[in-house]
Length: 260
Image (cartoon, rainbow, N blue to C red; front, top):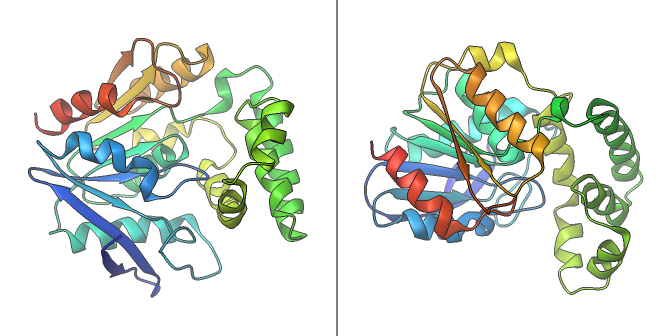
């Protein structure tokens, strides 16, 4: 990240800008940094000015306790000011939940797009699963058990025990433990894990909700519900795509939307 800006509470945020055209800020999800969405930014760069950043507590950005979702909304406001005061927002997974909450708060943005925000209303037992995860995550992080916190998230994301053991023994594990405290931030952004219908109904700008055709049915249903709840919602399904969407497939869809 080659640039820095400062949020309202003094937190330094690292970001970088690429391309030309309408400005779009890309917001990553849990266990990720701005580098995670950098390949998508590269796919947008010929038609949009794509901004990627490390959310607070990750990568090259700082952190200022105590955490509140409102601080992350202020982070987005600071980034919008830093890049000229006019921007659209895209968020993936729990980053999409942050983008929707920012838009509902009245943050001045032109358009919003999200990819598969994992609202658990549409997963059988989803509310109970989210509540159990929240309790266990809080306990693990309070005890300093970062590895256990990462495991909890990977299970929530659907990884099997063998894959989790493999991850623990991989070179990437240290980096995952480094950002583990930020799992509490994404958990806070997701709230109770259910679709925030009243909040979404307050969004006054167009919202594109995108899902992968090969993703679980409940995720596709959640994506469709987002589009049906916001006043100016639209919906797209990308055939063959999963929650780990390919930038070369998603990029053109977002570029068309943000330059319309």
